[in-house]
Image 1 (spheres, rainbow, N blue to C red):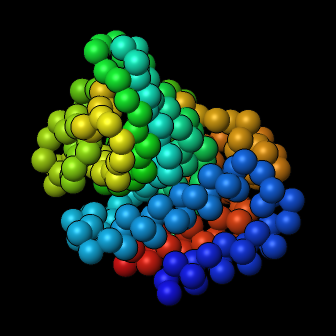
Image 2: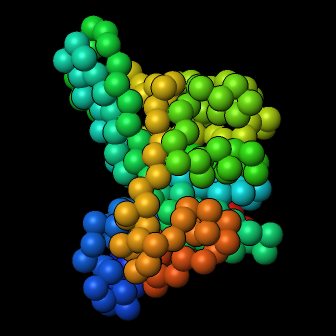
Length: 223
């Protein structure tokens, strides 16, 4: 029932968004909304829901695709949202995640990931035009649940906590060396004007009705 209502909200927002709803950006926003609903709504996600109550922001990657045949790599589209002191969530700023690795690996994996940002330092790190996991020792990234590796500290002391749902041949997803890059052209396309990630996530300046269901579902789990 909850999924049906969420899909109905997405349909209504698509009508309100008109031209915006036909873009790649809106597709990513809609998929991210469903991922938040499915992952945070899971009965086993009690720790994640608890962390959301003190979140400064969140990054959602609805599909990280990893493939390998001796030379492996992973990548996908992501979005970053911020939360102000009143509990309101910003519109999304768009990012991509990518990495490459060498080794004896054969297989494919399709994963959904959510990063819960618990500190201002963690949020500022992700806001950078290019942030590489594991490269900045001052930013602590932890993981909870199965399928994710690369935790650097206990979740309660972390700046960013990640968790994932993964299916496929690999045992898990390594965040080490993964690069998060800002997609300024996607931001401009979605908001109809050149606008920076800082303005969207911290300044709350990005407005698009197509993002309303995402903001509403995040607010529900952050209460």
